[in-house]
Length: 246
Ligand SMILES: C[S@@+](CC[C@H](N)C(=O)[O-])C[C@H]1O[C@@H](n2cnc3c(N)ncnc32)[C@H](O)[C@@H]1O
Image 1 (cartoon, rainbow, N blue to C red):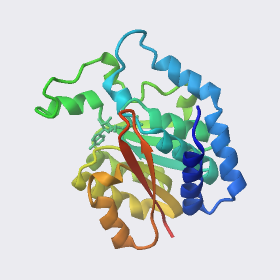
Image 2 (image 1 turned 30 degrees about the vertical axis):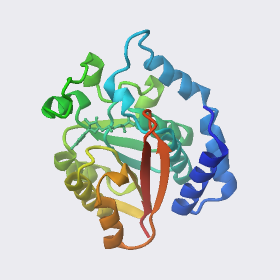
Image 3 (image 1 turned 90 degrees about the horizontal axis):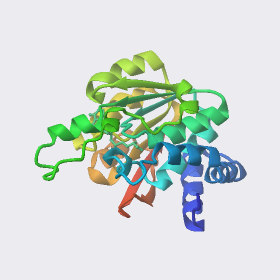
Image 4 (image 1 turned 180 degrees about the vertical axis):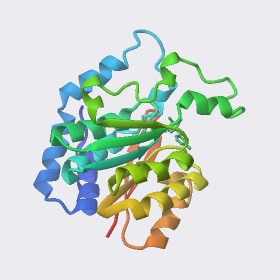
């Protein structure tokens, strides 16, 4: 994967702000993931549908900046417990799992309802319908087989499943929100996760720009927060917010 100097610098600053890790260590992990042919090839193989159109859940995967930030954060922090909400194809999950694989420690606990199921309920949001593909039913279909041993998937809504999951995991080192970006759901997930986050644990929030939930949460708990922007598959700017627990 090729990334420009500016993005490299932005990821470096973002991770430094969140972890206070040494510059050389962060640089090393950025170089490691952008030259990771094993992961790149496995993802390309899993998402090769010949001439067929890629499933919708592939198109809504996190942007490259977020993928790299998740990887580098998990390499830097060496977490035992990572919790993620919103799996879809499993692109973000794959980058987190590859970091845990390299660390040789930790588990990723993810919660998801299949994208296909969600869109069936959003009548009117997709007037032409969303192309159905059996693969949409399988949350995390893109995750390479060699990374699955460290993955624990819970199916269901985060409003119902997150509290019980936190009882099972104990303290969380890294949390990543990428499920439904409604104000209500974002605010509820932040409120639920924050007490369960370990001291110096890090919360990352995809699409912070969608609602005021992250900004309000920052104000409420105090301390600094940081942002990293990248382009998604449609060349729209997406912003990921990050906050470390003091
Ligand atoms: C933007 S996609 C996640 C993309 C994924 N992080 C990636 O990089 O490929 C959002 C996912 O969250 C799921 N989802 C939406 N609302 C949810 C909720 N309330 N609880 C659990 N999952 C939800 C959707 O069905 C979809 O699979």
